[in-house]
Picture 1: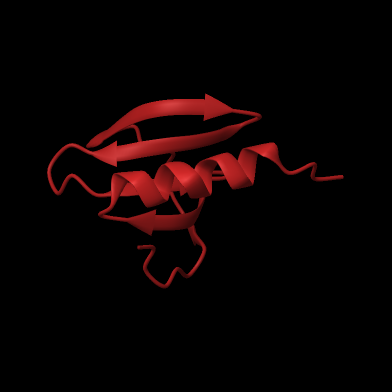
Picture 2 (picture 1 turned 30 degrees about the horizontal axis):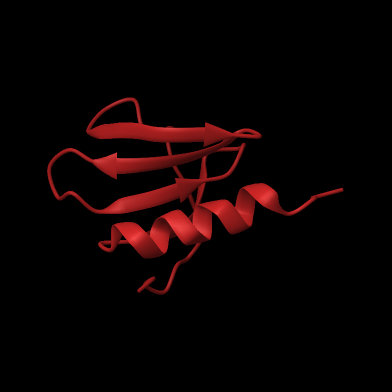
Length: 69
């Protein structure tokens, strides 16, 4: 289950985040302390977050497979 998200500019995960996957500039990360997940766009803006790994992977695939012209 994804939680409501306000797109939020981040520093890209330099600290406290493990990058699990990268594709087309997008990043899927896991917080090393809270163990929740987030998806960052190519400008390091958080576009989604969730404590649920399976839902965040599905969402990551949706973001990275859609052609964005």
